[in-house]
Image 1: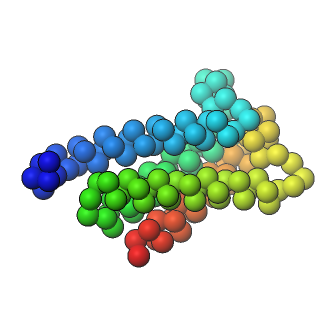
Image 2: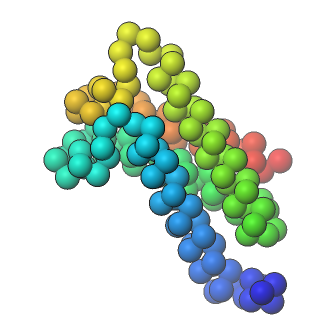
Image 3: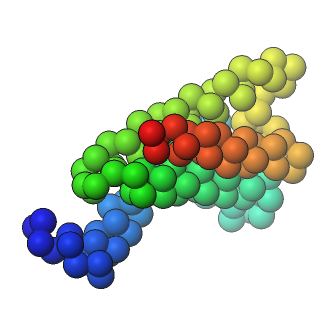
Length: 136
């Protein structure tokens, strides 16, 4: 297996497959912690949900980008990427905690684009901080 991972084509395909599955798994976890049904809201055209979900996808992918870049084995990259996802999830809950006057999930579910945009930017911004930390 180690010889196969030295082949750049195979290594790229392996990285793509493993991180693609991780993104799907972690999006499913995000779906469990939100009060709205992501895919139903997207089907209805809820742009706020699209922005928030897009930020989550970008955030997860960005964390894995750094993890793959900084670790020699796919296993280590996956472990560090999963740890980075946990931190991203913590960032999501901190954002919810920092807005006691309203519920982030409810506002996004109602289609509040301003909240959807800031949720997207928080996911992206936090992913850069996490990624930079994973590279040490």
